[in-house]
Image 1 (cartoon, helix red, strand yellow):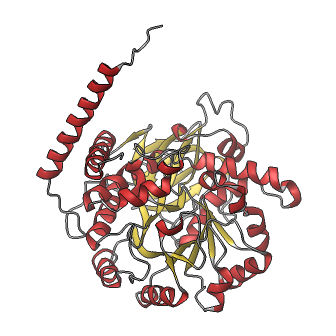
Image 2: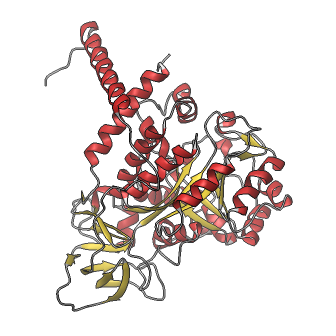
Image 3: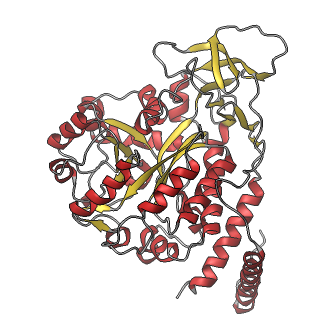
Length: 485
């Protein structure tokens, strides 16, 4: 076997090559002037076509429709028209679904997409280079173009994994132009989603949220857009949490100001609770409501869960990241929340030192639940698939549009191959999805009636360009930061 010899000379050559790449990247950034706004034309997307998905195992996640061992799904003008064991149409393009599972696309309800290009810098095993210190320090140097490229990289991965809706938890909106850039990436990718407009990394705790910029973003982006919506992400409330001062902490009075401004604009609110639980404090202040999503359910009490149920608050869990936290941070309380009737959904959190994989998220969540609780609070694999699809739509308030394969809803649909080596021979389709599947098995991704991926390849998005532009942005960011020091 050939060995690579590493010595001072090869290290210097590597450093020289990296320096050349950084210089090239800086030159490219200096030359580039790209308009990222609601008024600018978006990237070309595949047209919405009438189509018929033929002969798939159809998991509708709709108890009123039911599942089909073999069935057809008819889509027209972006809407699901009909589902039946057999639909005969003439002059309608056929999408062959034989040997595949047809189901609603995954809905990711909490993902810091702006951090995606930080992969070269974050280390899981070195505290000083962990996600929080790296994203806080480098995030303060982000340009709008950095935000665009990072979000586009994350969205390419999302679509590859079968995610058709994202909640883009953007807690580094340094200016309205940064919001424009992130929304432009979402529009250009063709994905459905909400941007949670947030504070900026390094923002003083006593600085109010940019409500004027928020209002401008709502005015420019949301009218008439069927795919993109807007909300806010809040800084932490009360006691110090995971991430500490790097994420900012609000008093209740400041929260009333920021949240009140969002509510005047009719926008929903999301908040991390990965620390001492603020639920009673928020309830006593009259701040909880059905427009609030909390994130990281680790330390709730039975009393707090009753409050959440009564107020209609939802909770997003990110099992891969949460499972890495110390035991003192609490445990993932999926069983307790479901038992209490609290709305729960599934999320990725970030993809700096792990990847977007809804299958692993469901698998890990199930394993952790079985290890800790078992059948004291039964959870089925079918319930986990609902958690990753319809429950996400309920959380984000879009269940009338998506989350299930239901006639009248928008066609956000994925096809998963069951003939691949890690899947075959396939048994129960829900068991296959939760226990065996991985992103590489996702064959086709349809969002709002547009085929964005087919046969495992993008129809319009230039994956190679997204990767290259993210790499250039990361290397230029490294240079500006003087990283590492």
